[in-house]
Length: 335
Image 1 (cartoon, rainbow, N blue to C red):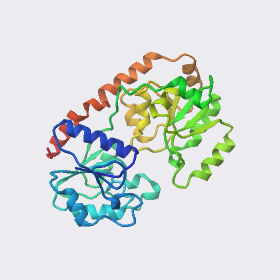
Image 2 (cartoon, rainbow, N blue to C red):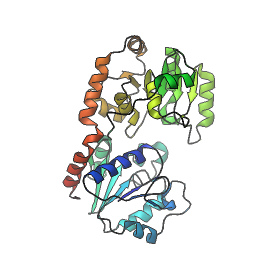
Image 3 (cartoon, one colour):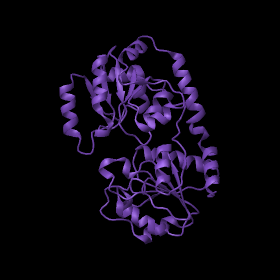
Image 4 (tube, one colour):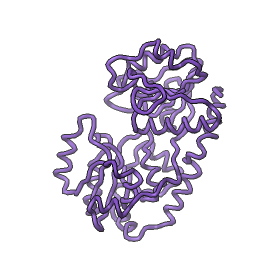
């Protein structure tokens, strides 16, 4: 049983991977969400819900469950009423809280209450920083970093570049939304230094649209926005020459590993969790390494791609998620 918020964000994507891994271990999994694709929809769980689900609704959703996995709903409580209702429904039940983000890690949410703990509740974080921060607040957790398909589908490079009308220009892809902590300015600055087209895949959100429009208008950079229905994320990576991640904060930052599995060089700002990922030995560029990036784009080093992919296969491979999850559950005593 997995409670999560619907949608196609990183939380929902990782929840789907966990569900698949649990099913491969022989567990029956029922997904419950406020919106999107789930076995049970409880609209009161959605971020924008005007009222929380009732205890009766939650009780019906929990019937027959030996374990409830809560995906970020109580970690970054964007729907506080739903979180509180879920806490009441989980009283005395076995639950595992999968923490992707924590409120004190976001300045505008730092006033919100962090996760609670009970004797039958267990906690998993996606990075060591969050695990340590929970321990400082007397909550013990284990870390299980996000995992990835190390053999993703091949995208259409030539077709996608033709759709973009980029000819032989360098294409830098920013595979995120445009919000302040994504630091789009860093991506624009790099694209300008490279004389490149910048392709921002996600929309401007959280009221950032006007500021983003102004940045683009004054940047002197040729910027393309969004993915239409005919273009997949795999096509976007295939069409790109460089992936950029200028974020100042990410709970994990899935595009970092996606750049590796799609065999693309990455330029990033070393946000805190990125440093944890980099410690595994990946070769990435920093945003300011313009000369080194230009040299690599002129003569790509296939050995670097192979090295990075080898590390990803050992440490971040979705094919290893099931046994790792089984080990974590056993360690937590929730098998």
